[in-house]
Length: 398
Length: 143
Ligand SMILES: Cc1ncc(COP(=O)(O)O)c(C=O)c1O
Image (cartoon, rainbow over all chains, first blue to last red; front, side, top):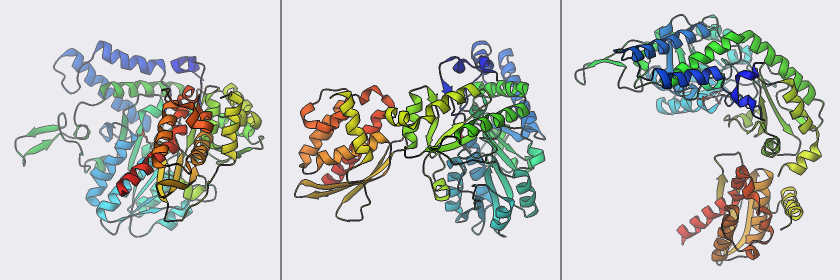
């Protein structure tokens, strides 16, 4: 759908690495160019017209994000540089101040490095523990395993809503409900979910949600930290500086601004935020339900064709998302990716930043196809034609 | 070197890599070498005896280019003195980076003569040599 909106799709290229980043529609590019060309000024300094306009657009995007993820208040939306920074802010600015030695943090073996390493550092610093919820034989998180993994010491459960390796969706709503009954915080890494399905933070009742603009048709270098107000109020800013302070008369008299500005020190990524606003408008105009339905249809179309190829081993046969991980029997994933690259097909080989997954799934490397709404059946047909012929792969992979 | 021959050499070494196995012998010097931009990851183990390469073993997960390149490097370097090894590495690197080099030294490693045409695979061919450089550094430190 909507291929004509994307300059990158006018090139002779089949892009199947949307889990890494997505292409940008012209309207997002235009919004960024418009800011730089027509009202380029700093934010929060509205003494003159163009600067006032910047403030308006910047804060308007905050409202757009609020509506898009169904947050209660716009002050619960903090702009960051991305998913990774948001997670680090949560671990350092919030949990570092409240965790104790005997506490436990629950994650899984299939989390992205950005949802592992901040917790590792925190655990090292506090002396507490990071533990893993076991995955079932499909590598899924089940409620049963969540319940089994919780101990009286569990303080945090931090999970991707959808993982970037095998694309499984977690029962976040049930997890939140159960966790909250046991006074456990739930942090959700929305990097692979917010772009692909409707998000309702109030319905899910997550405590924190993070995501990046660039994986949802927006620009790089900007992302969101959502937190329930009561928790964001307690989140200590990691960065201090301009824009976020009320006054600083002496060491003992530093007064910070209220949320969310308090957590956005320095000149923000204004162009990025405005671009994110345009991306949200764009996705909303298509409709998140429509996007999700179409992607599921496309995934089924792809998988149905792949299972007919005997030398292809699909790692995640069942999955609720637009990700298919596979290997070609006897051929290293990277060689497959290089082979496809000769035909201008972009997909990813590797461990997809979830280095600990190999312990769980038993494969270190896979090829990963991650679809988005602008991919087509014709593109899949081309891919399948190239994968069908093992002799050809073998001949042309060098 | 003829394109067909180059391909044959690479595929032969990829399918039957020399000395690709585990190594638990402490008398070998070990390095791990990997590229930031890709997923190749090799362990290289080198045994030196009286200033010469007595043996090299490697293991790990890597693509056809790195694996074959490592296998060819191993065959080429066993029996060579440290200065000869250094010379070989330099010539190989020059070849991959399109600088002047001595063809007659590289022999089978000439199979990567045109790898410069595929920018994203240059580092794969160079990976074992990067590991070997680390080994040479370690040897120098030990002396
Ligand atoms: C599940 C998941 N979490 C976190 C990240 C990190 O996102 P970013 O690099 O935009 O901060 C990614 C991106 O690859 C991801 O897929």
